[in-house]
Length: 496
Image (cartoon, rainbow, N blue to C red; front, top):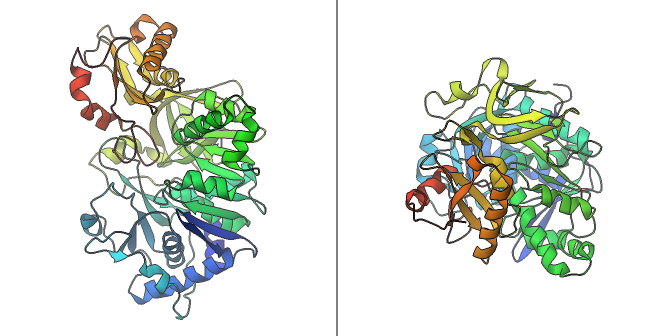
């Protein structure tokens, strides 16, 4: 792999003059990338002294921090596999045994874990830095997990080839480099968020890392050039901008939120509202939606010179998208993420992975005449009525979310005769506007697609209450279980 991104960043110091910033409530810390590279090497020496060897697995369950990044980079240098666990999603007492971990680092006081605070001390030792390993495209660097919208998250080993294919495709589309500062706030347990740190080390730009809780405050202070966010994040910021504008110039309000240096906004992982995409585009803040899965990495992406709102973009180099007769998407990769799950229930790998690296996504889509892909929903979310009519729920849910009063909407059909919408309200809850939007949605869709009842959640879906994944996707199964009594009760909720 003569052009290997990972081999380069662990063996060569990054370009001088670029830095990584870690921001939190109450302050921030800035580290030069050259120093980050040095600290990661010294931490690798300390990990090797503790008996960690190539092919071993270490785990991290902690909020975003310098220590998290150092562990990841040190593991890369040693050929050690990193398992990133989303805080609050796993029982930390079982992780080391369940996932075969040599060490587990945590920012919580959990028996059997190493305090992540010790990483800083380990990285400042004077032991000789070990020679970096060399990677091939089939080597695995990371054990990543599905977002867990249904059931227990499945573990998947991510290959070097899949990581580097994504990094090169993104760099070709967006040309990150000197002058850029990429803003990262989603959990570093999500491998894609660490891509931007790899990008900084390889292509020479700044990166700012903070926690989700500190994202809004940090964004205003840092003024990055690129923001990596999920659709729900941009929906919240849109409402903030509209509130700040209050009839005045929204461009001025947007600068108060984002600063003056935005080059573009990145979004994906869940469907974005077309109205939100247009809102930012009209403000001169181009926002580019894409599509991918843990099992595929990035598959399609809108980008400068090739963007169509409502689509998820064109297929990136190294990927092939196949549609069956029903529009169900399969993806074949030049460098597959993997060909099976590392940890999953029996039969799960066979259900998702086919021959030659094929991945059956379960998503339904179509291409337009110019090669832009549109996602219509998931095959699993198609509701079959008692008259055998098949209902695609995603277009209806997206129409409901056109109202700022509805943060999320998930449709169910307990009797197979009519739809029930469980609505996550924007705060404060506006029941009258929710009812009005349901009526507008019913007016657009056909007789079989009518929403017969609406259940308004007492509080918005969130990561904290477990109804959203770490990537802010609704957990449909858990929502169904949480509101089962009201969904199944003919008198539950209200009729629009």
